[in-house]
Image (tube, rainbow, N blue to C red):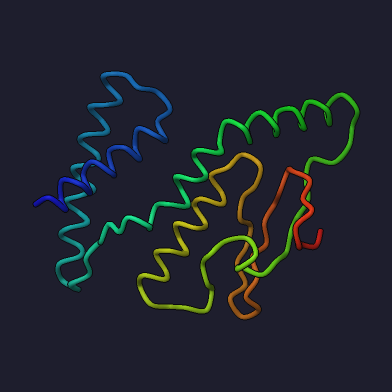
Length: 157
């Protein structure tokens, strides 16, 4: 029951995060949608005995990305303003090994690795400066669009 309540709270919080406003109607919708999604998750997981497990380290990349959000928003806004005034490039495509851009492996196919990969991709795409364009599991690379100037190992495509 505690896991169900935690899942309900998590899903309601995700709804509020994407809603963008904190009003009475949005909060009520978040509670209702979170409850329905938690019930659906519980019912859909029962036939296959697949359980959603909240591991403390699972959402660490998302929390890190959320904490970097204000600074990245400011730097991307500044870069876009400079590009609008002076002209120039709006970003670049980076192709790099998945281990360079995140801690997840593309080769692992067990459920926990897939969950880690999904959360890692969400975290990489949450920031305003970058998002994941494509995964190439055969070559073990991730293609990302990036608005910031990087000195890391990655090749502009």
